[in-house]
Length: 110
Image (cartoon, rainbow, N blue to C red):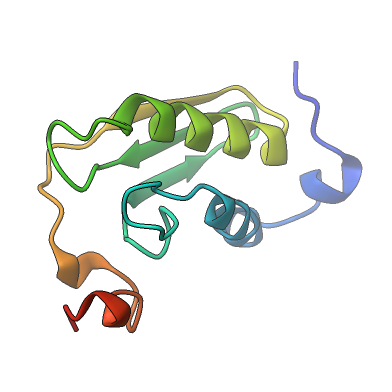
């Protein structure tokens, strides 16, 4: 059973995806100080009426904060959407070019 509000239920998938991505900006990688959206870590977001699924990558294969970032991302999306949400670690390697334009400027990378 879904806890979606009537207002959320009336939104298109694109609007819901935008809403989730904006909420995920609250999830910050503590080592880098940028959020998972800025870093380009959220690779796929699939939203159905009764569930959602996220494919996310990490900045390094053995990121010490990986489990916490994954769970915080899953939990935030589930909170926003009001439907069960699953998350998986994608097989892509992160590259600084995946970050939003200008996000890494302070790091001297772009």
